[in-house]
Each structure stands twice: as structure tokens, then as C-alpha cells.
Image (cartoon, rainbow, N blue to C red; front, side, top):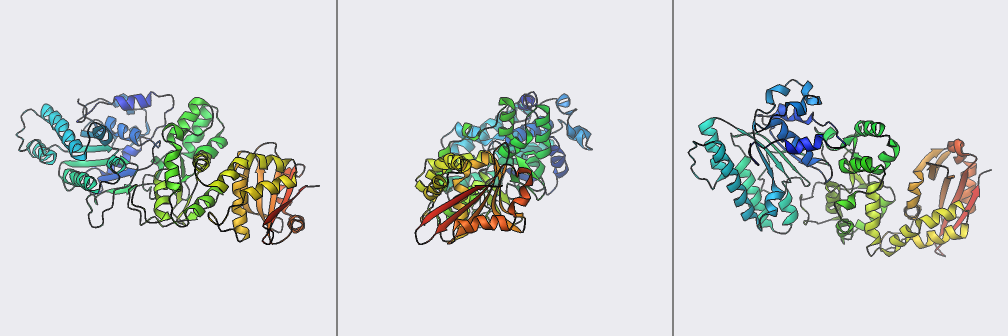
Length: 519
């Protein structure tokens, strides 16, 4: 047993003994099946807080010759699979956390040198009679081990992309690191499996395809490991039942990362902390400041602010993810920024229609906090006034509602305000706090048409139907709600229902509002 070569299983023991544990061991069934095949290289990229290191530690505990993990895994799902006993603690494992090596050194060259020295030292301790050609070359040393003992290795590399986050601008250092990994891993007979994890997918350098042998699994393309990219809905339902927590509230706060048409996943860390603390709140600030998000959404690309406003309004935004260079500095368009935010977990991605969106209440609060500290004056004012607007609506204070909508009016520097659709974004931003009390449905089919915005209460607040009019009066909006029988879809709330008309006049640049209690 050593630190890097055939390590112990202590870290996974701690995970399994933790207050909240979810069995994700069937990931091992997949890695067992790809071992010593052309598919033996796999790189998993997903955001912080999504359990990457936990999965890496699980693989170490299962494969490493340096420990006995029978009791750890015998009651987990993997124990029921065909290859379970064949591979349990039967392999040489090299476990490398690249962030740990980088933090001990001040350059990529020094990091690689330290890694080689420490690992070769452990190899020499494990294989006493080896004849090593060059102890400063890790690849050649492992070649010697393989030739002289016929033993191969499983590589488990965590935080593989830390170089691209710590040395964002140093292209030379990044290429040296990629070349080191290529020389260590590509086309080597001593590699029986390589499992890498990080936040970013493998860096693209034009024709410089150092690690093109890897199958990449990411938030953009999670197959075939979509079930292991986060907690599934079934897993969170079971946890909520076990710990007597409200699943619907948990879903609202932490769900929303769409992996396939049928499957969305939750943020691991936030669900665990929510269960332990027995409350629902934003846990992102524990590991990352709001300023990190603010840097990206303040970037001056044409259309980026428009898209962020639409995202805050609950819209889906189309983007092209294919030009993203898989780093944190090479931005040529708003699409590059939005794609990075998907990899960082601030946005979800729907691959079916190539759109991004804000996935849940936790992330929405991070966006809101970032914008409130930015120079987005109109948006910031609207967000700060949101609760007051909502209470004015409940009190049927038409003048106050019109005033707050007026202040939420986004000028042309942020969003072109020239049609009813733009008006709807303004209303959605202005009523941001309403999401704490309502499920908001845009263009809801009801009666003889589609209501512009319907607010379905989660508690005892009044249901609300809002009809928007551009260059028409508010009486027309109220009449349309009644004539097209929009309230028909909300018959359960007929004794507590507000119908609201909001209109904008291009000539006067003024909003007007009319509120009626349905009789």
C-alpha cells in the first residue's frame, strides 16, 4: 500500500460512512466492461459539487491491490454484476490528483517533475528487482515494469484540467502538460484503463490532438454515463422519503440538469447539505463566490446581456457549443461564454434543440446576486423591487404595479424594447420573486386560447392571469381574458383569482395596469 501506487480505500470508506450515501457503484460495471478494450480511455467532465472525486475514490477502492474492499462493496449494486469478483482489488492502480501536485509547485515543469519523482519512488519500493533505464522518465519506467513483470495499470486521474484553470493564459505550459499526458497514456501496453475527471473537456489546439483517444462524457454529451452525472430523480425521491423532506421543494431548488429527454439530474453537494441542514438554500456560495459568475456575464459580447435577461425570464436560449475551445479564456462570441457556464453548472443544456437555460432556483439566486453587484442598473433595480411589485399586485394597487414595471423597463442598451415579446421579458424579470410563491407558465393553453402568463400558487396566494398588450389599452387585455375564458384552466382557484392587464404605449413610453378580482 502506498499513496499513489495501489493506495488504500480510506477516502471511500469515509464517503460510505457519511451521513448521506447514495450507491453509484454501477459505474464500476461500465469501467469493468471497457477495460483492455479500445474504449479504455474515458474523460468525465462536470461541474464542481457533482461528485467527481467521490466516484474516482470509489474506483480506487474497488480496483486497488493495496486494500481489501470486500466489505465495502458486498452490499452495493455492483456486487450483483457478472464481473464483480473478477476485478475486486485485483489491479495495480495509479491514483493522481493533479491539483494536489500543482499546489505543491510553482510551474507545470516542476509539477511534472515532482509527480514523476514521487511515483517512481513508490514503483521502486513495490518492485525491488527492477532494472530501470531512466528513472526521470515515467513512461519508460512503466514500460520497464510491464516488460519485466507483465503487469499493467489502471490510471485514475482526478482534477486533470487544473492546469487550464490555474494557468489560463499560458499556452506553452498547457501544451507541455498535454504532451506529458499523451506520452504517459497514449498507445501504451501498460494502460489497462484510464479514468480522468475534471470540470472542462479536453483542451482543443487545432491539429494538436494530444489526447484524442479519450471518450469524452460531459454536460453537453453525457452518454453513456448520464445516470452518474448527478443524483437522479429517483435517488432524490428516495432520500427525501427517508429523511422526511419535501421532494417538490428539493426539485425546485436543485434539479434541472437535462441529460437525456427522459433524465435530469441534481447537484450532489447541494442535495446532501440540504438534507443534513434540513433546509433549502443556495449552497454554491460555500465553494464559489458570486464574482466568479459576474466576470462571465459582464463580458462585452453582442447579445450576451440580452440572452442573460431572457434566461432570467425563464426562457431557453439557442447557442452553438461546437466552437468552444474547452478553456476559460478563449472567448470569441457569446456562445463561448454560455458554453463555459454550462460546463461550470450555471446553465443546463438541452441537446435536442441546442438550447441553454437556468436549471433551478439555486442557480437563479446566484445569477441574481451577481447581477445585483454588476453595472446592470435597470435589471438590478427590477430584481430589488420584485417583492414590492408582487405585494402591490396582491393588494390590487394598479398605480404601484405600473410604477414598478416602469422601473423594470429595460432600455435598448440591454434589451431592444420594441414588441410584446420584449415586454414579457420585462414582466418576467420584474416578477422574479413570484417564483418563490408560484409556478409561472408562459403561453398557457386555457379556455379558447393561450394566456400570456399564468401564476399557479404553491400555497394560499391568489392565482393570477396576466395578459400583455403592446400599443393597446389595458381594458382590451382584461376583456380578452374574460371573452376567451382563460380562467377556465384555473377553476380550482376560482375563489382566489386575479386577472391583470398590463399595456405599453410607444408614444408616451408608459405602462398601465388594471387588476380585477374574478367574480
